[in-house]
Image (cartoon, rainbow, N blue to C red):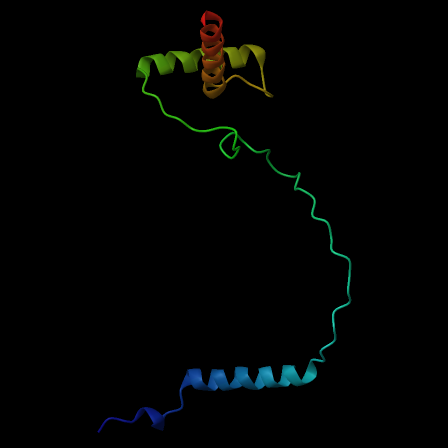
Amino acid sequence: MTPKKDDKPSMFKSLLNQARSKDEQTEAEISIEPAPLSPPETVEPRKAGRPRGRRSNPDFTQISALIPYDLLLEVQTELLKEKKEKRQRQGELNLSSLIEALLNDWLKKRKKED
């Protein structure tokens, strides 16, 4: 004959009973006092950490373009050479800013022609 489930006290049941009794004790010990009213704190924008990048800037959008792989490698090589020569940090010329500058120049030329 198999033993019934109710014959043996459950390990989890005893833990649950202990937790309930502790909760009842702490509720009796806690006195509820209203929190003091304080003026609302002004939230200042967070300045610590990295600055927002172009990816999270709503003024920019990401596009994709298909260009020959060899052309990409040559452009990246020239950008690295320029970076080493000028030791730039702020406003450094990268592929994204190069494409932006080239597109702006193209638009200016188009507007002059019209």
